[in-house]
Length: 331
Image (cartoon, rainbow, N blue to C red):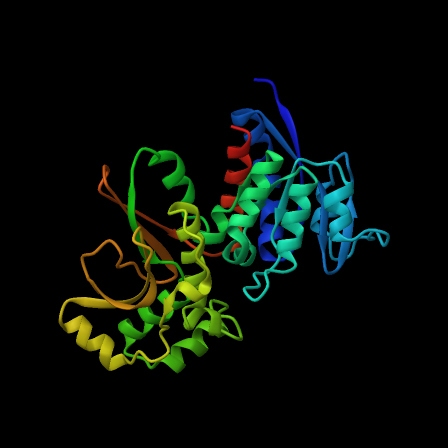
């Protein structure tokens, strides 16, 4: 098999960006052998600065990005525009207010004739149609599996494996922090505040957990599904959202005694309705998963219900989805 060199930049070198560098290091030889793609990281940019090597950054330079000497004459946009590469990986933090800086990074990459793979939900939730139209105009791809289900394949499953099916609805648990909190509350009979503090202490919940526990993160992911699967032009404002902050141990016990669990479920239907809310889920339902797991049931007209379960968060898990997207662009 003839091997094609694919040069990538990583813009944003937090948990996901570092995860991408790590999975490329681990899997580079295997990917070249199996898929005929030799992935080289030629540029990394974050708030600490920029490192570039158009022949491919060495492992030592990548792993020591915090301490290695930076290019003071370049910004992240300079890397995207000026460094020769085929794919820009956008892994800056999600901003659902205006999508920046990821939105500008993605637009710049497409206008510079780069493919885009991103884990960043903000730009897709705010400007999905604009970005897809720009990508089509430039003959480039935007892929974003990691932005919705982390390691759990939803977008690719619908677009590729279920391509002949009409999708009726997608519903599921799309936030591992909320699922962990509700699971612990149900198992131990503990109050919400106690479990939230525990989740923060072990790194499952952020110091400001509002985007997770108020249902915002799930809603943003629903918007991306609505636009990419159902061809809607939805925004966050179109989602009816209720979080988990008012759920009590008593409510969970009552549900349990009746044969149910309470889960934060996001649901998008082909009729245009988008909803995030705590819901009673039968204990034997595929949506009843525990801990930090995510789950999605895709309701189809031909294949029936297809359910996928996986880790929705974590740097290596998200990076696995990024890597799969890169491979799909060239397969």
